[in-house]
Length: 631
Image (cartoon, rainbow, N blue to C red; front, side, top):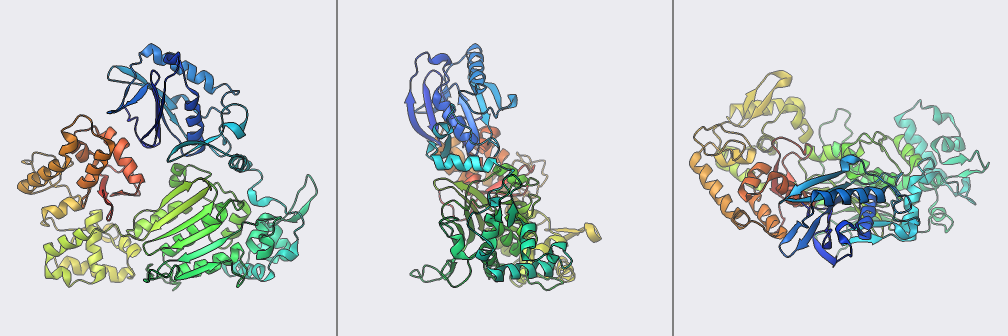
């Protein structure tokens, strides 16, 4: 049975009605005729899941002191419950939209009792808000870490605004605003930037008003006959006093903040905000922040034939900046904020995600709240319309061996936050083990040579092409460096020409092989290579026994509190990658239960990292505790 205490799930006991939100017991209520009653709070959670990030409902489960247990429903009970559920769901007077398909509802058996499981997906932007009854302003719910909450009128109105795909938010014609509210210098500078990138673009032959119309910054409404400056035109090229006018966006705010000072009393080491010293529109903000990002000392500048001096990491940062500008709900609170901390970048903007996080991670689908702004930035070479912007950022961060980016939403006020960590996924213990393996020879290596060996450990092989993504060396220099490492006996070559790759020697220590995930076939080993790869059986048994001791508090009990499970997982994975099969064997729990109920929440919380972050379903996927995470 799937775990009813997984993240984003709620248990609904039918005999004893208990609603659990995010692992906390929120309340208990008995219902008359409760055998077949689907309580109203279930539909509140259905609405909340649909309007937020989705989740799972468990009907026929009750909460007790020792955790969840079944309510003892028979197959006939669940059949009746399922019929009542679908009947209510398809009644438009009770629920505004049925976003479920048959595959989202299933019946499973556990300990002789039947359970009805409902997988609620995130509703699409055209389906939101999903609400109870006939009044969206009284029956719309969302979900945060504390449970379900009823949305206020402004939140509901913003959901309705996002539904109007035919009329993007930035296409609104602004009454009482005209061409004089634009900063002519910004428009001229934009034209020059486009001309330097696409010299023969036909729109460049237009005068300023014509160019603005092509971009969507000036529009004529064919139905009403109204014509004038649009919100996108004002945001991109406007004078700041016009943008912040009460008839436009009085809460408009732009903020870039660097927090790199060593002195604790220094709040900002650098800051760019609306202070009257520059024309604070989106175009000028982009130019100034992109310039600061381009000179960030933490980012490497690889060899480049055109000597631009920018890496794919710089491009990823500009993509993140533009994403915040074009996807923002500019009428929302807080404005655009870019924070540069010592160990991360954070980009945040008002509004909510128009697509689910799963769709955004997969890429290929483009949904934008401000389509004209998106077009304006595309002509500058940023803000891809193919839905690959986030994927481009993730690939770049992975190439630099930084912890993967995280994307999340916050409510009240609504904000989307993208965090790009600058924390290396290269563990210090790998460096120490390489030093133990190769001795003084490793200490004499250059920084590029040492990093090459670390990549070979973490990814089980290394190629010239991969190193071109990581290092500042030319491919010819990389070839020479790899040959040198082969001559020193630190790498073993395989294949030829473009198919060439390099691995560590087979005689490296067993503990380093475990870290690298290199399988060793040893018929005498009591465990197969997938369970615990080692070449030295004595060391294998000793290491495995140490892990068994750590896992004992869970493995020796039938039921363990979620907190104990997660603490044990973090201890097991500290300093090493372990597979789901290894962890489930150590904990004496099913892989499905361990993965869905405990590992997935820890990964989402940033406490466990993946060996293969870009391939979540990798057959050899492993999990390791993030450096610095405490229990």
